[in-house]
Amino acid sequence: MTPLAEQTRWMDATDQAALVASGQVSALELTEAAIERIEALDGQINAVTMRWFDHARAVAAGPLPDGPFRGVPFLLKDLWAHYAGQTLSNGNQALATAAPVSTQDTVLVGRFRAAGLVTLGRTNSPEFGTVPTTEPLAWGRTRNPWDPTRTPGGSSGGSAAAVAAGMVPIAHASDGGGSIRIPASACGLVGLKPSQGRISLGPFRDETALGVELCVSRTVRDTAALLDAVHGPGVGDTVIAPPPTGPYRAEVDRDPGRLRIGMLDHVPRGGQLDPACRDAVHAAAGLLESLGHHVEPGYPAVLDDGAAAASFGTMWATNMAMSIRRIAEQLGRELGPDDVELMNRAQADQARHATGVDYAAALAAATSFRRAVQQWWADGWDLLLTPTLASPPLPLGSMDNDAEHPFAPLVVAGGFVPFTPAFNMSGQPAISLPLHWSADGLPIGVQLVAAYGREDVLVRLAGQVERAAPWADRRPEMAGG
Image (cartoon, rainbow, N blue to C red):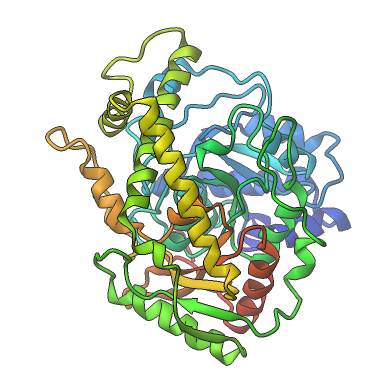
């Protein structure tokens, strides 16, 4: 690699933006450095599936907005994030083949542009973001830079792998059941799931999708600064999080005070927890205690209720059926058996056998669950500490489609990610921090969950933890370290 590509490879987005702002490096030079890293590294990883390099060069050479990330190279996840003039496949073979061009930006993509980010292309995503791995039939498997035989997580696995390998400092990610936090844990990154309604999903999706969007990054300050740049409602939004009292970037350096933190160190409703993940939570609890916080066993009792998982499944399957309908409308034809992966067809079929009353009952159960979960924070707790995942990153192929058992990938997924979906249902903000590594060198994240609307508390504590136990020097050997 050229000296600039090497020099900037492990710089975070904040430092790269400072290079451009000071005139030391041009936006085009940063773009070329990132392109060089992608071309050198992605053959090992398969994170970047659509490359818009000529477009990115033109954007970087032009009059960029004077935003906080002016000139910083960036990647968009290949899931629902329309970028005018470019294609989007949602990890689906039919869309990848047809390659329809988006006619307008989503609200969030427009805000990414206004922040000055230069988008180089799209990152791999499982079809429709269904499973917590990134191995779509349309684009092939993305490999974890820490161990190429392991998953980078999902559904934002392509973004996480690209950032973890040092291709770009920050990348778009979205989270409908853990898909920011899961790959952040698997790849040793920071992954903040914002509160529902913090960032607009307009104009094509709304809050019923359970999803939220932001990024994966290597530093807390990058995540906080990007949240500052993109938060807020769009036209027609009906769920709107309360506005912050100040910039999130300023919270990174603030003292969080003494917090009361509950610790969950087992899988609710039973299930296997890898000892390394339990060790990660206990080590994090010890670190938090050393920083002056009070940590004790405790968590919302409703997390033990299996009915909530059933409601999530009903809503997830219905959203899948709607996704397939949208794609059929976009392509102007019905989707056949070869157009949608087996597990997603099975979910859509399941939803078609449900009634409107079944879906209404699931929504009502989700509302009851949300109120019961949030009551725990209202009763005097500040944060909940959990593992992010139930195990280190799984081997690739663990969630492959199975013709005899169409729901088998989802069963494996449920055992892998028992700690994240609840907080999509409750709408609360949660963050995964890279605080632990297994004996064989795999990243293991821990999750912190705050009350609804309190990203400020999460960012404040995450900044304190990052200073006390920095992770920036931990780099995967596969990608050249």
